Every structure is written in structure tokens, then in C-alpha cells.
Image 1 (cartoon, one colour):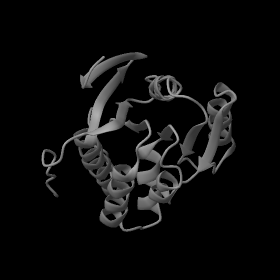
Image 2 (tube, rainbow, N blue to C red; image 1 turned 30 degrees about the vertical axis):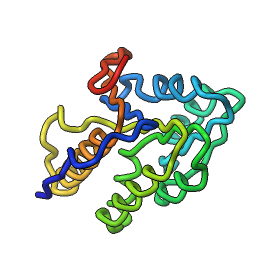
Image 3 (spheres, rainbow, N blue to C red; image 1 turned 45 degrees about the vertical axis):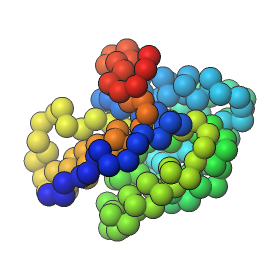
Length: 181
């Protein structure tokens, strides 16, 4: 198990991290944060639509956003998508899907996470990252599920350490864990 140094660098003032369980209101809350900055806003989507149900979920997310949003699909190349728009307000939804895509594609996680950190450090505009909190549920019954929980949990710790503000969503209610209201 890797141990992370989560205290060596000052937080990135432009970075907000929103996490919580499924259907906790993470995405809607993150959108509101990003829209507090002037448009245009960049929505970096990491999900891939492998079936009709997932296509419907993606369409629902897209319908909720109005004018002013540009969607960038980036299921694997998230660091590159972040670097491509350093001065535009950005929402990345979500890190959970990104990690899943990387793991299912047998990608280099440490290398991807390092590139992700470097991309975030180069941004200057408001940036909101969304992720699932996977440490509150049962231990998965298979090795891949446990590895996913571990990797995402470590990435979440890493992002929380870098973020100036961390918000945990519970039943649609934001609980500020780090930073100001």
C-alpha cells in the first residue's frame, strides 16, 4: 500500500474538490460553483457510454447544463484536457470514472496521477473536481473492486490535500470539510 505525502505543498487556491456517494448531489453542486465564474465554462466528462442506461445518464447531465458550457470528452487523457484550457473555469466530472477507465485499460496509474497533478498545478482558473467517496461502503468482494477502492481513495486524498476547498455532499447538502463556506 502506497502512503501519500499530503502536507508538503500549499493548497491550490483555484481548486475545489466535491465528493460524496452516488446521487448525493455532487455534480449539480459542482456546476453551481463553476457557474459563479464568468462563462464560457468547460465541462470535462470522463464517462463512456457503453450501454443505453449510461447514455441516458450522460444525456440527463447534459440537459441540465445550459448555454455557456463546452463539453470535452476525456475518458483517459484527463491531464491533457485540463492543460488545454488553463484560463477557463472548469468542472471535471468525475475522477471515479477516470480511475475506472484507467484501470480497465491497464494504464500506468502512478504516471497518470503525476501528469494529473502537474496539469492542475498549471491552471489558474477556477477548477472543480468531482469524485465518489468509496471508503464508506462495504469491502468489495473481488480483487479488482478492492484495487479500485484503494486507488480512488488514494487519489481522493491526494486531491483533497491540493484543494483549497473540499466539500462533502450528503443527501444534496454540502458539508465544507476544508476551506471556507
